[in-house]
Length: 252
Image (cartoon, rainbow, N blue to C red; front, side, top):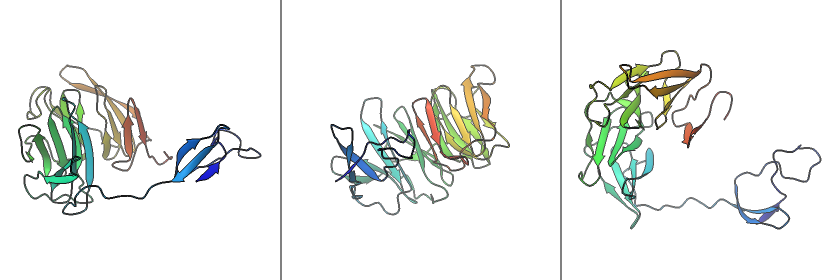
């Protein structure tokens, strides 16, 4: 254990009695004088049984009934992780062709767990009914998936990386109904992140768009929030509450 003076990055760096940088450690004890005792990060430890290859993506979901599902994908398979015995259950519907450049991306719509990668298209698992994933017909093959209130949306489309496509309201199997559509945002680069919610954000390499559901013939109206600031890395954006944190050319 190594004691440090209190961490105060907000004060002048010259002539103070505080720690300016405290990195790669965990706070474990707060002392009476305000100083903190830090400990090193623990080593990574294997928990689950082994998958068939490198895990390209994983995500956990809390379903409407409060139960939890953790889904992960390798190049060729999809699994559920069972926390009761740390086992992996193969729930693949076929042999997939995901890769480092065509990674899995997951989201949940009600009891439907959706998995997409641009090589294999959208896959769907209805918890309580299905025993394996199956293809979800309708959406264009895409890199990303999200949920806008009652509609499923995919983004970074295989035929236009600057575009998004969304389903009919309350029907993720209908992609040609009156409230489903496709929108392209030219000139801002590929879509690298899509938030959930009623007022979604579409993060691109060089810009950020905000969508507002109108309920009219246009379905959604989109406003450009930034024209020279975005995230160039897929997976480089984190949505927390009503905030988005992302890596840009100007820093974090």
